[in-house]
Length: 258
Ligand SMILES: [Zn+2]
Image (tube, rainbow, N blue to C red):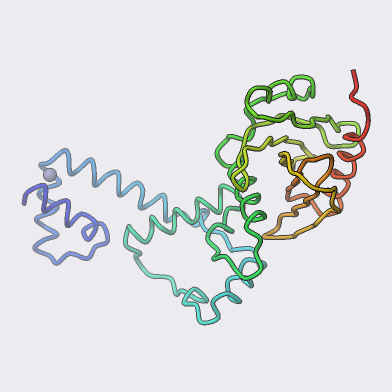
């Protein structure tokens, strides 16, 4: 057997799907070819790792209901376990498992549904990305007098930066982000262990009341004030996020502290 053939048959061999003759030929090749053996060992390790039951998590009930509602005849309603999943399927499952493990990214797997606001979707996406890519903050500081100047020269506006630690929402940093085609300032606040992202960018128009949206376990609050568009998002409860917005609005209206 040549390496090319071995490469083609490797997955079937791993899944124990080869006939006796091919299986024996494959075993002989692996005994004599270090390259194919190394590849085999890698796949075997991956295969075992992806079969770990700890990788698999039951989807939250809200997601299951959402999914079932979106696809009532979905084959995903019940998938009987296979004795041996092919590596490709196992990898896909592992990838999905990794997404679940790495945070509430499962919304990305959902199809957009009627009524979904594209801005809200972008904001949720940005929030999740900020938590996943370890790109939560470009400037790490609890000091508003450090965070605010950091944005200078990076944006064509000066964002309003306020530390709200005394209200239970400490500022922890900021970064640049993009929402709806705008370069925006993202301020990062904490509420206990939760992260709040506050996006802001200039927008013409009158001040507007808060619009509160709940989606996929996140609360999004949008409002306009002083020529700026603000969007706050977090997985804290709605009451906490409203309190955050109120604290920010009060502080934003106050003269800058020195
Ligand atoms: Zn080989």
